[in-house]
Length: 234
Image (cartoon, rainbow, N blue to C red; front, side, top):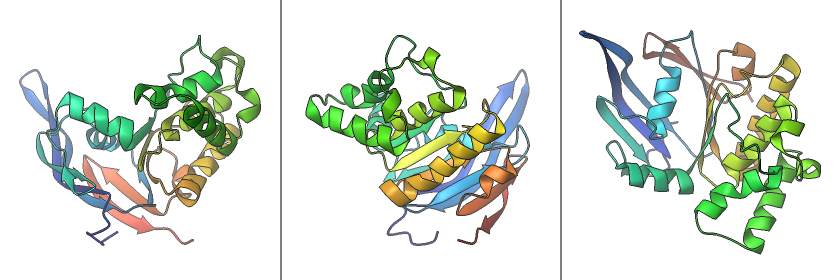
């Protein structure tokens, strides 16, 4: 993960502090890492170690106290809310532990939303929705609504929605947290296929060491710091 010319995400000395009354709490401490196109990186560690904070900062859902974030060689550390919205619509897909599907919409309609928000329409949207629903094995459920799906199926739809606009970076925060072990294993296998099939880089936050084993790189975190990185064997 060292080729700076190809680096998709570069985080340098990233720190995030929160105020709790008169006390400053450091959630992230001087984190530095590079992510290359196609990397699948997992971040593991106990609750409160800074995993989700790091993902939120890289996705523009929170602002750092200090340090820098670069995406595609552009500094975005203190980008405006409007600029971050554009970045998420163009370059970033996010999958949460909760599925956040719209109950009144069908599977296909939920998945189409990111493209519609970009102003795309017609066959371009329909073709792309078909492609990603097939990729997550949900094409036969396209007319169902979220309430008619299992948890694992809902998460597959959420992943399809996250990749439909062809982002370069997927951020996944505990995507198996609401699933049983079988569903969780299936979802992690699906994440494993994304870099191979679409060229996405994936940053996965998980409590599960088993889930992390699917990644190329496993970053262990403790007390807001990256402790070590293990390169997984192919």
